[in-house]
Picture 1 (cartoon, rainbow, N blue to C red):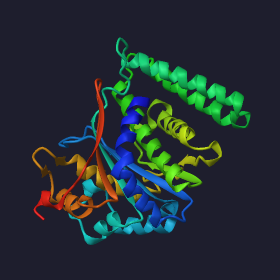
Picture 2 (picture 1 turned 30 degrees about the vertical axis):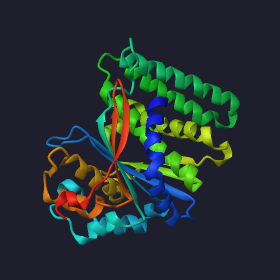
Picture 3 (picture 1 turned 135 degrees about the vertical axis):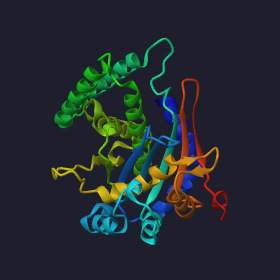
Picture 4 (picture 1 turned 120 degrees about the vertical axis):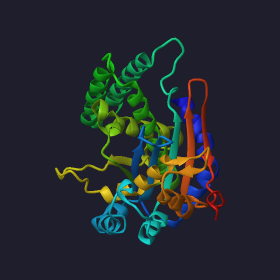
Length: 320
């Protein structure tokens, strides 16, 4: 994972970081941030696998803004026929910074010559567990939390040990956790904020393997920060929890922001420059194109190479 992160850092430390800093300068007095995410993976009649993230000040997750967004974007993109002014205004609002990753390949996430992906994943579970045990010794005040993390990694290891273990899903979980952690790291470092809360859509990426994605996110974030920041400066991270006991998440309207991003890019045949619906073309032209706060990144994590590259979306692509 270190090599993958190094490749990611090499891309995001360039123009992406300039744009993120411009966004953070607008919100320079904010001490708390949130990340909303949604995914479009192996969807029927789609061209790309996509993970989308939206960064915002944490007040975007207050009831007033949740309700306002629900009015402006009442449905998910797949249930929306036409893109109106309210949707464009919400997605283009500078309260939000969007980052969408096209996941070209995740084949190399666990690759180690001479070993199976399953074997490497199990070794990683043991390695992380041993690391957490050391934290218990060095930080006894966090013992209860660390022991809960160990339980989750034990559940994940048990699932990974099965012959039927879904390694493709586990690799995807690892990638999503890494991407979310890296974005949180940049917020910690650049905004010097006190806290970051991650709100994810309800999805097997979050729920599978004992909900290990959240633990990987937190551990990756902490490890990245510790390399470049004093421990006391590291932002606290948490998760948006839905405990209402109903089918709809209370933060559904927030998740619709990355949902529109993910749905649009998943539907874009970049080779032919075609989309499956006029609504996707409208969003590419009016939200993605030439918008420094709406970033598109191609991610290839292959067995022989890792590459991340920014894709510029121009209005010229769509006849404008």
